[in-house]
Amino acid sequence: MDTSTKVDTHTKLVTVNTSTKLDTRTRLVKWIIFSVILALLPLVFNYLYEVTRKGPPTIAMLLGKGELLLIAASLSAAVVGDLIGTGNKQLMWKLIVGGSAAILLCITSLYFASISSAPPGEHLNTEIIAKYSLFFFFFSVIVGIACIPFQED
Image 1 (spheres, helix red, strand yellow):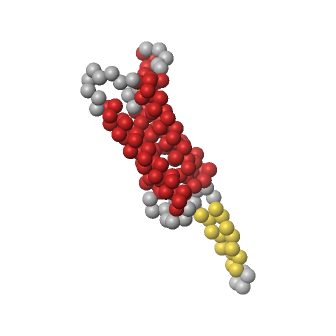
Image 2 (cartoon, helix red, strand yellow):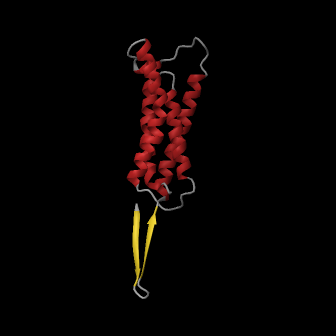
Image 3 (cartoon, one colour):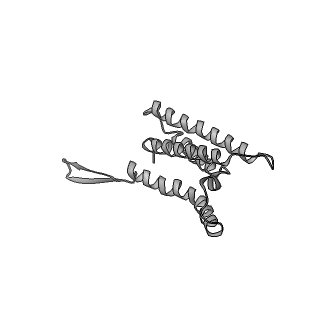
């Protein structure tokens, strides 16, 4: 928290300004818990479902349908939303982070759409889907972390 004290020497009044603005570390922890971890809970449930009924699932079984792509898309969309209207301070870095998030949003959304719209019976390589889902997810987390210092409360 940001707290500053100002003393007026002429009238001997002391004013304390307590700001509710969150520091970067607090915003990072808040984002990881309430955005990333909560978004992953459906995949945790899928894991528990599979391990309870069929034994330990493979990564391809858990991520081969592209659900992690939707999580990556939502994290990327949140970055774009957080950066809109934050002003011109450090504009170049905001453009890099926001542009990366927008590109990730498009790629992950279109990739998931192509996976989910595959005709029944069409063979999809679930290992490739899982691999690229993890890649795009981790990249969206990195972009999300890079966005945190530019957010405004």
